[in-house]
Length: 104
Image 1 (cartoon, rainbow, N blue to C red):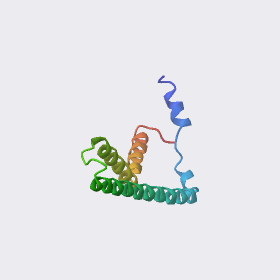
Image 2: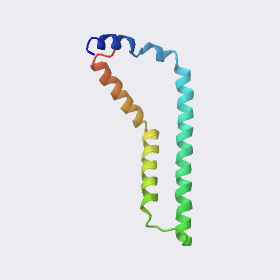
Image 3: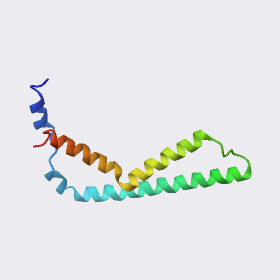
Image 4: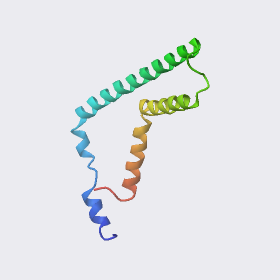
């Protein structure tokens, strides 16, 4: 397996110059991702508001751990994407790969 590692590093490198010509795709993708995050956050707020209305009407319980776990996890994921933390994680992976010799 060790004799194939240098060949893999040459074949599967990421060309940073290719990203320069894809600026318009990244702008469109960023706009779409922003709108998607905003929609998900609005949906989360609506879902929480409906739940609070049901609790105040007496048709739902406040002590419902599965609901609160789902809402907490979904809020964390939405905030990770909104803050760009997911891209920071990908950047760290890319830098780690570069430090390990996976660059052209």
